[in-house]
Amino acid sequence: MKHLSRTALSSFALILILSVLFPLQSCSGGYAAFSDTRFDYFDTVCTLTAYAPSRSVFESAAEDLFAAMEEYDRLFDIYNAYDGLNNLKTVNDRAGEPVEVSDGIIELLAFSLEMYGETGGALNVMIGALSALWHRCREEGVGLPTAEELCEASLHVSPDSLIIDQESRTVQITDPDASVDVGALAKGWVARKLLELLPESGLYSAIIDLGGNVATYGAKPDGSSWRVAIDTESGDYLKVVEVSGLSVVTSGDYQRFYVVDGVKYHHIIDPETRRPAEKNKQVSVICSDPALGDALSTALFILDSASGSALVQKYGVYALGIDADGNVFEYGEYPENAENGETSPEN
Ligand code: ADP
Ligand code: MG
Image (cartoon, rainbow, N blue to C red; front, side, top):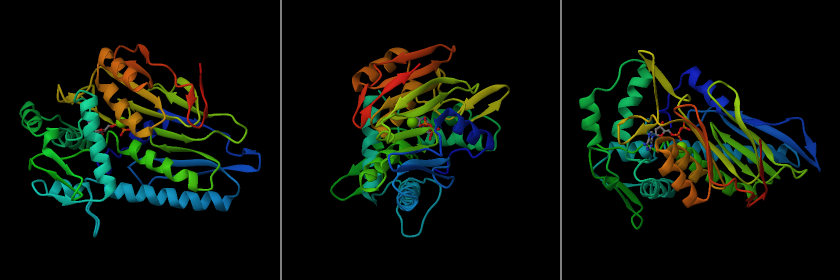
């Protein structure tokens, strides 16, 4: 997802929004802790931290996991083409015709359309025409899209223009002026796929951080959970949560933004106003599936409290956030019994 802003400021903020609190020299029950951080994928910082029986087991697992990240990064890239690969740029460029794509794209887009319905249209993967206008200004760091541009773009964001043909394994955007933008849920979806690789990896347990999307697999060898700090714009912790087998995904207005005349314009667009969403400052979702967490955290960021809490109840997840007035809110029950271990929040 090379379309995301690349300023040093935003990268720094991204690292701050969720930090994994981890003693790296730890060793327990015949397993030692290892970590590998790379800056090559999804335009963000990706870190794998894990307990493994040896360094070589860790390194081999890390190579496999980073190779998978590279594959998905290319597949979901809307800015760069790669030889012999039909990726999302191909799909956007060839709007009007069916494009044969791999299962990863079919699955991600099908999930995206499902979440459009579930979020009442707040999360719309066909928002590309609108988000591109804001993205262009943000990259240049100046100016705002005009009302006319926003109005025209909003005519080309219908999810009905995305046709997925499961039989022929093709996707087609029927509106030539529409385009997909999977930034709201791709990293979470990739984290879900990485979690699926872990049982065969030789790792005892792991925590994967894809720039604000933190997914955990199992608990530490001593039975304790991973500690993840949910940060705020000021750098303080909103909460430190202990998770094993759960994901913590955050959407915030201070990750990627620019400022015009003292007003901050960030990267999450409210389809109703066609402008950066204004109801919340940050929202974190904790649940077992990082793909769902990513989709919901972006949607909850856009939605008001009534719609947001209803969505949280429906999915049985837990959300914690700060609204535009600075009030901390919490929806749902903290998921006490995750699939891979006992969890509990720490206040
Ligand atoms: P991040 O990628 O910083 O972790 P999010 O998961 O909240 O943050 O996703 C924000 C991204 O989602 C934007 O950069 C843009 O690509 C995309 N986007 C913005 N608004 C919407 C929307 N209403 N529906 C779907 N995608 C959106
Ligand atoms: Mg998201």
